[in-house]
Amino acid sequence: MTIIKRIFKKREITALAFLIVLFLGVGLRNPDFINMQSVSTVLKGSVIYILLAVGMTFVLLTGGIDVSVGATLGISAAISATMIRDGSSVVLSILVALAIGIIIGLINGIGVAIVKVPAIIMTLGILGITRGTMIVYTNGRWVENLPDFFKKASQASFGGLNHYFVLAVITVALVQLYFSKAKTGRFFAAIGDNVEGAVLVGIPVKKMMIIAYVVSGFCAAIAGVIFASQVGFVTSNTGFDIEMVAIAACVLGGVSLSGGIGSVIGSSIGAIIMTAINSALIFLKVPSFWNKSIQGLLLILIVVSDVLIHKYFQEKARKQRLSAKSSFVGGDE
Image 1 (cartoon, rainbow, N blue to C red):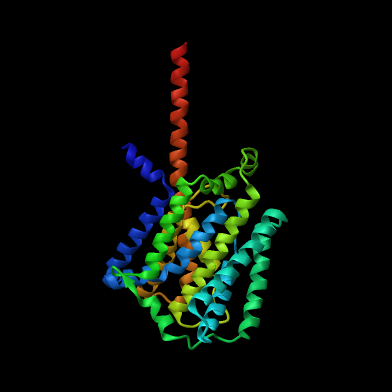
Image 2: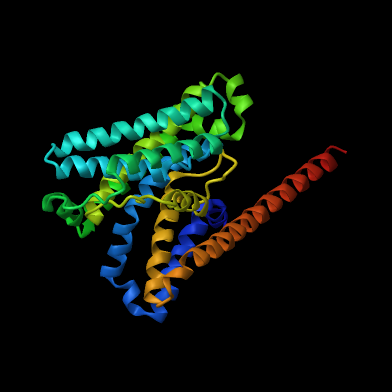
């Protein structure tokens, strides 16, 4: 019984349970949704969201937010795709894209941690600047005619799983290990939980906040390169509104918007949920213009359910502590 309580106290379990129910529920209506090909498609499509969610988790844990990741993804995709199309080395193109993501993240981090600009304002401003720069760079045109070898790279698999998804899983595992085992890994949640307390115990708050935004930009840049490989072209509005999906994925996975609570595993599960919802609506033959509304409704329902479940356990734990205290006092008398 104790093990079951511990399991349900983990915020990731709510998201995982919903993911399973989603697949089973839609599968009852359309069995094709739960065949291996469909599941593989969902996992492959979730890679970009997973990578964005990994970076976003760093920022959210510190109590911040980064709404510029969609623009970072877009400009990284555009620049890497243009360089590869024009004959540049793939390695050099990827490194340039990653450098851009790091620079954007560094600017965000300095603005939030050093200059003390509110995170939503700073990253929203960078979103506009980056989006405008991308349009100027591409001249408002699509980046097309990418080499076949670059596009086919997204189709490779390892053990039946898309190798980009395998890369994403490995990344999630390493980051989760860092958060749980490394001393500095626990700093991010400590900052989000109590920034004043973090300063008092000697945590380099400004440095860690900057690192969080740099990681977010870096992950968005990786996602941009993978997007260009998967889709095979880059439009002038690539990445538009995708930051909302990344934030929603983290929230679905149990990451608190106020900071200090959450895990990258939960964020990744949330990313898969967001992808699965889009796929499920197609299998249920729901018109695409309903997608955003349904995603928003499900997000609210899941988050409210999660809050109620954990509030129940917290209240129950509080009553147990009070009961134990009362028994102790009564025993003394």
